[in-house]
Length: 309
Image 1 (cartoon, rainbow, N blue to C red):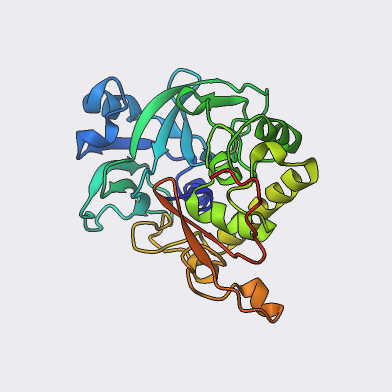
Image 2 (image 1 turned 90 degrees about the vertical axis):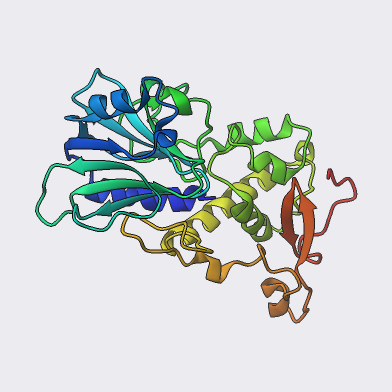
């Protein structure tokens, strides 16, 4: 599933290629991909046609495009789900196998004429949402200059790359929970945009075990974890995100390369790169976790005695 860096890579592409352009025609090829739009496929297409995409904004994994030409405070929200892709294509380019929605865009010199939503597994989708004021009176997300957020995303916490992310508030809310640290940072209501891959990578970076109880975290440790998340997300952004197959690509169809530099995730039985540098070849371990897996180094991420599994 695309996580924060992958969605941010897509947002940047949308900002470059489609912001400021008018939608001239909308075609819904599969109604399931607009199922969250209450008026149905016909209303979705009719309402969008003629509007102008004002910007591309993200909070965590939620991505939205505020629209001009509609009542103030309406956005086109896209959630990529497990396999969703937003691709900017030439109008005469062959249709992708799992093409779900096509937006024709007003011509602009040197810029392709269509925005396509492609989704193999149909867990993602597009819909229109009214905008509501943000709870903290700050911009709605990355790329926003207004204090509004789509109603559908209002419950989502800020992410660690957001300039308005509050480390002290994160620490207090973390301490108030009685769970383990990995389960906590996967909760989009506490901090958004973190999935299984980047959780393991950030915990490795911070030298913390995934079963560390949240109510034992001290302020310096919470700050260290946030810094680790920021470092990992920043590295992933530089690499264009993480791709294990062709399901994640940016708006131009290019895959990310961060998977080539993962330190923990998926490296079961391989030497810990940090311990290797210290002359000790500790092997990365895999443990079951919430129906998935957690990868840790037994030496530099020791399980605490009071581990909360």
